[in-house]
Structures are given as structure tokens and as C-alpha cells.
Image 1: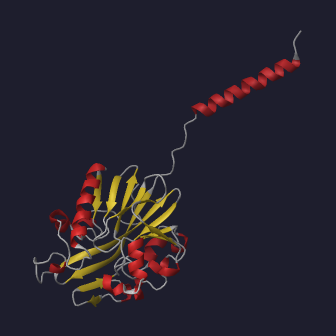
Image 2 (image 1 turned 90 degrees about the vertical axis):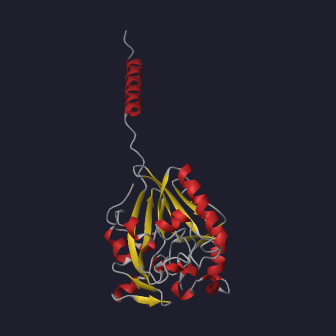
Image 3 (image 1 turned 180 degrees about the vertical axis):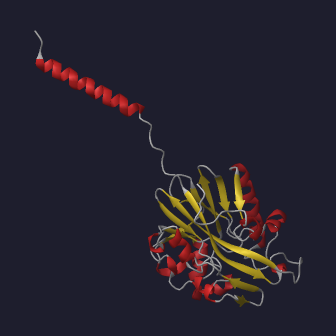
Length: 286
């Protein structure tokens, strides 16, 4: 005689096994890929390039670009450097600084962020390679972002003598109010090795670079001001205004070893010629 209860139990068991089998064979959706956006954050016409390569090219002109970046990770967003101030866009003729640099902005960072749909006040982290004016010009756009900076750089920027290091607090009046994490070496921003701040001091007391691992593009090291253009990188030249020449050379050598060990490419943030081959917003790298 058939047992109805047993039939029902067996039927439910069979359904459960089929469901589990279907779940086991169903492909798992891949985790969202990290994205890297590149912004045009201004241009710098250098009227005497010998300040970047002492004893070479006295009086020669060279144009540098000024790049900044947004890293979009499944766990948050990181703005890397903040370029020249957007206010310079109101002066198409540019502004001359120290009789050596003509600073220009043709596209504001705020408008480029708007173009790709990222509100500055929602950015999770603000990573500054160093506190020179062409890297902190729009830092005030990100009041809620946690500032990620080497402790030596923070002490120099907010200490009693910022001008000693080439820093001008008038260019970052609101930055001290940001939440901050002072770093003491390399820092894995999202905890999975895909976005790592690399301590590479010398240009300034707490200079840092950014390593980004991208699923399809590969590995990239964003230079900060390790070098300002390819020729200086290849010859390990140090600008006259660097904080520590010996440490600058050591950091470049360490960066070169890191790049080789990690099969990465170096994106030199000020190199106009290299930058011309890099796609900018609204395009991205992943």
C-alpha cells in the first residue's frame, strides 16, 4: 500500500536536489571590475625647462599636461590628485607663476565629473600625490572624502612652515576639515591589492604614487611627480626644487623595480606626449 506521506517527502527531496543542482551549475556573475577615469586637469607652459633638468635646456620652453584620476572600485571611489584650480578656466590667457610657469585650464574638473555622473561630495577617498598647487587645486570639491596622505606630507602642509616645502595653504583652505588617514608607508586602499598607494618620497617629504590593477587593461603606476616627463624618467634627473635629491633618485629606482616586478606600465602624470595616447573621460579603463 502506498504511503502518501512518504511520497510527499520523497517528492520534496527530489525537488530540493534538483534546485541545488541547478544552483551549483548556474554561472556566478563576475564581480564588478575596477574602473579608472582620466581627467584633463590643466596645462603648464614651462618657460625655462632647466628647472626640471638642471644645467640642460636653459631658456627652452616645454608644455606639460596636468592629469588627475578617479578610481571606481566595488567598495568605493578614490579621487587621485585634484589638478589646477577650475577657476583658471575663466582666464583663457592663463596665469603666470614665478615668471616660469603659465597655468591654464580649458575643462573644469567639476564638469568632467558631472559628465560621468559622479558627484564630488560623494567621493569616498581623496588621495593626493603631494601638496604642490597643481595637484591640490580642486581639493575643496571633495569635503566628505577621507584624505589619504603620508604623515610627513600632512605635517609639512599643515605645520608652521608650509612655504619651506613649496606649499601654499591659500590653495587648500578647506582641506584640514576633511576626515584624514595619515599613512606611514604603502596603503592598500580597498583591502584587496587592486588599488595601492606607494610611498615614494623625495619630490616632497611625503610624496606618493598610486598602483592600480585593472582586469582588462593590466597594471598601472600613476607617477605623481616621480618624474615630470619621459626623458627625465629615463635619465633619472631631479628638478632643482625637489625636497631631497638623493631620496628622489632612490624612489625612482625603487619604482622602476616595482614596475618590472609587477608587469606594470608607468603613466607620467605631466607627460604631454604620453598623455596624448591615453583616453580621457567619458571613456575609462577597466
